[in-house]
Length: 386
Image (cartoon, rainbow, N blue to C red; front, top):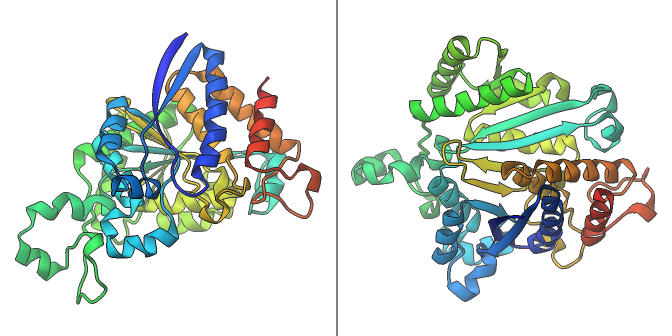
């Protein structure tokens, strides 16, 4: 049996409860491919602050990057963000941990698949008739680096202090709200954009789907840049892949008619973050969202649900773990445990088709006897895998 070590961040809030379910399922599923997963804890988040005085303990950060594959349970807590985080904004873990890991590991591609099944159309927050019999597959690939999320951080050391003050360029933790002007630097580098788009085109070719490129080229220079590069690469290197240019505002409207966004969807860091969250809500619940960040050169990867930490449900066995479970399937596929990944995905779909629900998915039409908690729905998924 092949051994695979994975760094584990259990996370904040209800994260550890959901991750316990997902890890158990991942370990069992990987055995189908003769892979033995060993999770090594690398704690991060508010849960580490009391012990380490930091939400990103350096020993955890260094070890996670060294291992190169991370199963990330989500960090952050609104109450602590507004108490300790107000006094020490640099400790807010969503920015401190996530951006640091993405940058250090070079995680350029953020995969966020959204799959609509006709049999589960009643769970979606769009009209059931908007979902065709053959279903809908949206593969969101968010550009995970640069853009407005990294600009001020990446360029702060290169800008003279007087220029930064004049333009209002500040790191987010130092913003007081009293400034006369505040600026975020949003940028793309040619080499990075080309690498990202080639990967997105390749994925679209592999799936025999169109590439839908999201931009704001009617207003913003960096998206004129994005559109020109995507057009050139598509024409010269991927003439067999249909390229569709879509403005971000109209793409937002199309979330309500998901079949019109069927394909591999390429979008910048900021737009991808916002639109894919909207797509997850249209699909039915943020609790179902799965996500992965990949370095296409080294294979380094981080797998995080994107479903948040559900802090109000901490310790109640009510949080929906299925987003984490489906993220585990992405992780298994990445490490070559494809049989296990397919088994997880099929089991989750069968559990939902048979009417089992967590609270966020439950409606008046559902059977109250099939409303399950965090642990119970995990056990149901495991039973369907056998």
